[in-house]
Length: 360
Image 1 (cartoon, rainbow, N blue to C red):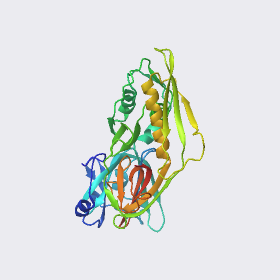
Image 2: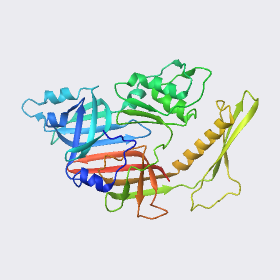
Image 3: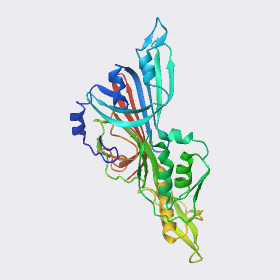
Image 4: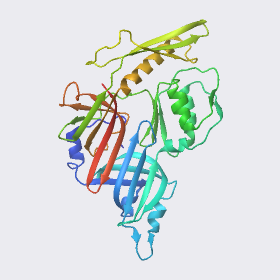
């Protein structure tokens, strides 16, 4: 299976692989068994939402399985989608598909109308982490990345882990007083202890350096596979100052960084505003500089946003860059970081929408 975090593609190669993007293909696997093929399912609609910042999900409707005489859905189909079953979703065209989602049956329901159908909702491991309840424990670890590994070990049935190790040399145990999701996203990342991204894709949980994979997935061309693009950049003028304390040297340490303004931006204020952050965990000059630079980078990227629409491209996933060329050098031609992706198939129409989380 192609690695979603390292795969690089060309439009021409995908045209050949997918037979000119004709006849969308859906595989919903339980173990190695494709239930769509084995049970001859009619998937009326499917929507896969992949996200860097929230639990990803896949929702699909299965029709043609309701018996009007017995007033029931087929038992073999119902048993295939029991709550808690672990499944994977592959999308593509004709006979070629790419695995882009792994999760569990989180919700199961029905819609009764002109065409009665089962509605299945799959969620990734982050949903389980959110529902784990508050956990009160001490993590006896040397580094924050070790705490991540410990936390994720209980979810081994749903995902493996890919970790960029941190080198923190913690002297005291790390306290956890919230659910596993908030511990990782809030205590470890948002509070600045580890400059890492946490997301789940294709059955792998990543705890990695932000925007680590710089090589774009592919180059998109407007009027070919790129159907629409919108981007916006917000005005910014800010300096970051992080203050900590070096116990060994008995002195304050200060890290500074500037939030870069856009190339077409003019300065308004005479004195640039300063955002000051105090952090007791910052005990070296290096940590102060790293945290200041991390905050500045996040400020720069959150000021840049937008959306793009393409024909159905399973290869487009969060956590990767995609290049756009031949639009306009200042307002269109960038390498965009993908924040969220929605792959949607309805009938014979397969379309992908991606949300931009910044660009180079």
